[in-house]
Amino acid sequence: MLTKIQKIGEQSLAEAKELLLQGECVAFPTETVYGLGGDARSDEAVEKIYRVKGRPQDNPLIVHVHSEYDLHSLIYDDQPYVKRLREAFLPGPLTLVYRSRGKVSAKVSCGLDTLAVRIPEHPGAQRFLKYVDIPVAAPSANRSKHVSPVSAQHVYDDLNGKIPLILDGGPCSGGIESTVCDVTGSYPVVLRAGLITREMIEHAVGRCDAYVPKEGERVRSPGMKYKHYAPACETRLFSSAAVSEALAALNEAVRSGRRVRVLCEDCIAGAFPAEMVLNLGNDGIEMAENLYRLLREAEACADLLIAVEPHERGGIMTGVLNRLQKACAGE
Ligand code: AMP
Ligand code: MG
Image 1 (cartoon, protein in one colour):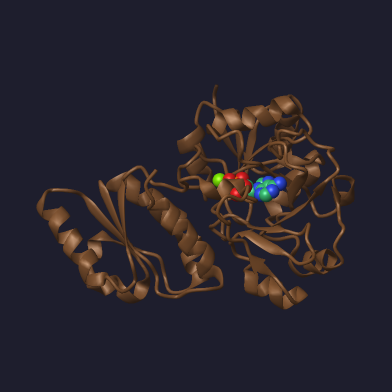
Image 2 (tube, rainbow, N blue to C red; image 1 turned 180 degrees about the vertical axis):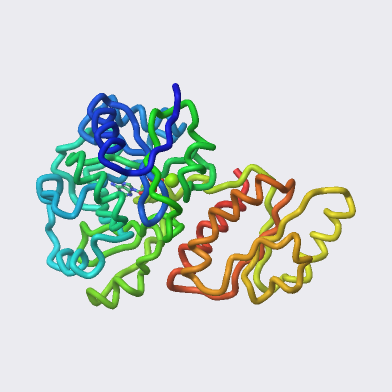
């Protein structure tokens, strides 16, 4: 199959709609990462999404709709705080997990009675979702377990030959996947950290917990148990207090002839040879935006990536650190 990359416009949108209605997958930009979209109402289209990505069958998908879509036709909205949450943060990089009305393919939620819905704010995503005007199931448009794509070229590098069309909306500014927040209970619970932070949600509605799986409990965020976001090269992760250990590891690897890159925050970059540094930047917003692009740069030119954790904790850094740790974790 030929994979085309096309800028978003009347013609490419018409083509995207036709493809989706035929049960094909189309990649599209959002403010977080690129999504691999399919018609959420169709079992066949949803199966294709899993197949194209090589995604485990028990990791549910997020349904994307435009901001005027009749959300309540898809979900039950039982909790009084949810409206306030939507008003504060949507459209935006926040996915809410509701009780499902069962109006989309059961394969979207992998048999759960909940449905995760996101209303992205990216103008290209809004335009695409309005044009097709159906619920679009979409995970990140990468091969399962690989680094998420933040440009059309990244999608192409992973899925060339497997999908017919990539809608190109330029690089993603957010950089890490949406916050996933369960709103079925009496207060919201963050299942996956992201750009809308637990602290921001707490500020908006008074209480918000972060989900911590308990021993033996059925996991509420199936996607979080997998190895994820991993570059093709070997990785080693050092804590923010272990800069000298990271430098020693770098020197040893260079002596044995390996091609090395160092991923670290700006304030410690000076400790490493400049030509080897992939600089994450200074704050959570910059680091989120840069992380996946730099992980992909690392795998393109290095055998070994030495990553040093940024020192800041909480807020957006919760999501950034979570992705970095998973990217550098073993199987
Ligand atoms: P991705 O599409 O790769 O960004 O991953 C989607 C994330 O949303 C995964 O972590 C899923 O586990 C989570 N998710 C999707 N649907 C649900 C749901 N119904 N309940 C809980 N988590 C969900
Ligand atoms: Mg993903």
